[in-house]
Image (cartoon, rainbow, N blue to C red; front, side, top):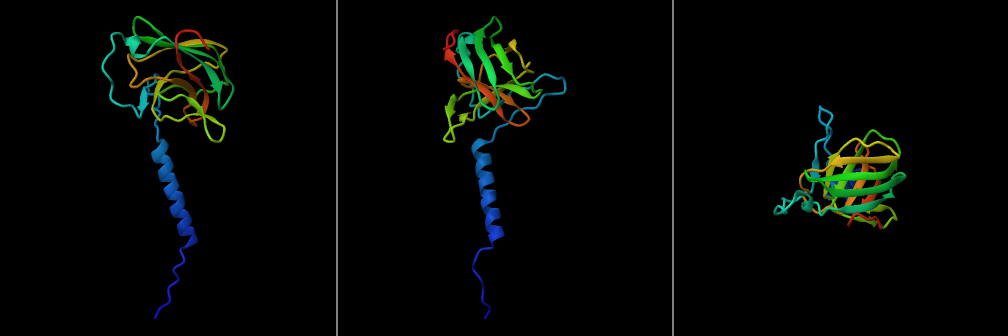
Amino acid sequence: MVKRDYRPDTANLIGRILMAAAVTVTAAGCTYVAPENASGTSTNAVSGASSPQAAPTSVAASWDAPLTGRFISQGTRTVGVVHIAETEAGATLTLENFSIAPNPDLKVILNEGALSKYTSGDMVVEDPKFLDIGGKLQPGPGSQTLNLPPSPPFRIRSVTIMDSRTGVAYGTADLTPGSDVK
């Protein structure tokens, strides 16, 4: 009779635990930011977006414009105010008195979720739905304006400036109705 040792192989057990953790993390927070196309203009990417709702009476109304928010620094010092305003063609996003560390990979991301304090104390946007509106950002100081698509696929509650290469959020502004910053 052969005696078998039923103790699990430690390396095999650690490998299984790490694989389960990787699958869980990937499934819980899998997002995609589209790379720039060859012409140098950004391709809009939507993650976790549901099907569009009934069309509002005007394009800007679909954005709930005007909306305003002040940036809160996350990964690096981010200063300024963001405005979403109605235009004849739809809506624009303006970064006013905006200043951030220089980085060629910065993108503007619109989120369905708002900024909240995570258990570790970090400020994060936990909702996985986002819209990458692209655009190359100047580090500032100054103002810059980006055109928005005709309508968002969900209600926009915050704007994040993110390093598209590393996925690090530099700063986020929660949006409130109106044109005044609170």
